[in-house]
Image (cartoon, rainbow, N blue to C red; front, side, top):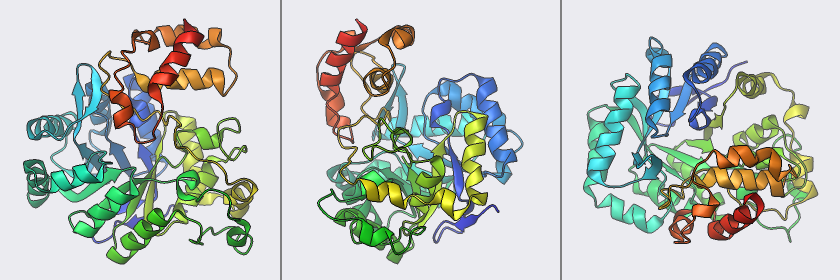
Length: 383
């Protein structure tokens, strides 16, 4: 049975399994159309479009023609396209230009939830609150160009400050079991053994995240989840710090057992992935239960692991850093021969060989990845 949720005090009603369109970037229009049409057919009515790349915005807009009134769309203010790359900007003129571009390409006069995009540094939040850019965002809400104002962030401290400010209606937050759990000198079994299908105990969640979830609950600020699969790492025995693969259904269910989670945005790039995600509604408790995997090993962390989010961009050399890291992981973690992915790696055009070692990417990375060192390893493997 399809489940719905009202987004806090906004009055906006959405279905709980939602489509994150990030992985549709770089795909042809036929594939974009097939995924979105299948998602809508299966009852998904909530989409996130943060990508600034023009073609994917255009393809999504064409696909949504005639469907807009039946869907809720998230858009992001601050995601820009610069020199052929995704980037983040707080510059007022840039924000205006690319948000207008989003509305135009999606053929819509409004966005249901408009996010201040990818703001992780709490000091940047303080600067933003005194800026003309925030005034612009609030004006969009006053004029009902956006119906609810949100913040997207990976940082619980920044998220907490935004919620406390009273300025936001919705929080988009990176959430999965690895991000949540305190490292492992503490036992997890006391939490899961009593409620094997309901991981609602908060005793061992990282304190700053525990405080955030409780604050959102007290303020009625709904959380929209991103990174629920850990960029796919949780689905891989080789990549997961738990050394055991979780299923998509288990990852989704973990998110929904956190307080005030209203929807999970899943990056889907095939019709098969849509079908798998939507099967959550009819899954059994046993299929959704993740307790044994979490209990078996709690020493994992994704700190220092690339999540392929490309928030490290723009790169001075024009490298698609996420793709280089993905190909590197295929070789190092999935044990795929380098020769198998060599052609795809070379097709990037700009590769690790072009790295300037300027370290600006590392300053922007929300996961503390040693990017320059990884570029060195990729250079050795592929060149």
